[in-house]
Image (cartoon, rainbow, N blue to C red; front, side, top):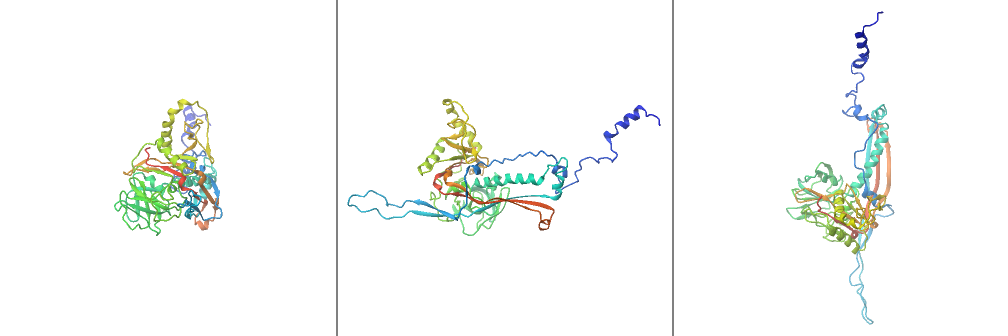
Length: 446
């Protein structure tokens, strides 16, 4: 066989660069090999390095103590000492009038929070191939655990009432900030403030949320046509009672309107502004934004201490955290810097000075900025800044009836599909044993 010419040798040596004995495109990553969706097998499973791009911080949940549920379905709160039962008595004077304390009953049953995940049999196999994510079930299980705790944190920080931009008898459309709808969950019992009638509409009948999509909350028949500037608020939660529910009171201001949310199974009707389940200090500004000030914060702390409590933690959004830092920044000139942190539960503040002037603390009270802190709404349906909550956690607890359980199911016949499904669920509820020593500052600028 004759030796090939130089041109033939070069062409044969380059053949592998441009063609294959298996035919064109054999080794290319095809987009028509799908797993469960049209995204393609390589889009679904490619890359063992998986980056978490979501905010999974759960500072409020971590800061509130957890306790065992115990043998109880409620508790009692003493709200009045009785009138005239204590006074000075002269040597031969009459005794004080006999009176009794006012005792209120709080009914509380555990709530169930659940998180599901799943993977098809094919995706479980292909994820372990070269370039796959590895054990896709373990990956989804880990992500589901993060999502489960995040859901509980978001429920604890859910807002109680929001201004509406319109609706019908069975739908409520929230304002321009569609994230407001996320504060309402399927199964919540809800009510309205009818702005045209200037009256809160409550009903003992179950008017519950059936779905939440974008800015629209779909629910049972309201009996009224919901219009612009009406207010939607929660009477009872399907999930965990939120901190915002606890500090709420009847006829509280919401975007220039009014609302009367309720915590636990307190009386649905008949409560008045400033009644026994009101927060120690609930500061509103008729739906008009204002800047956070030390006076507002000091007043909330003062009210709690006046009512016999001691603030243990301040929860706010990152926007208010930076505002407070600028307010106190000038005081740093009196202090040298040293790294110091304080904590509540398993959470720790940002490093700061021992006096908290770089906002590890304020007046010795730890500050925990949480991205899930709800925002107020102004009278134009526009979101303002996040609220500020000053809490005495000695009277707050997350009571756990059943610790988080993991259930896995591989019954293909029951699922009628070749899928592996997983479930995480927790049974518990947020408890507040003293409403008077919790406070809220709302209607703040961002």
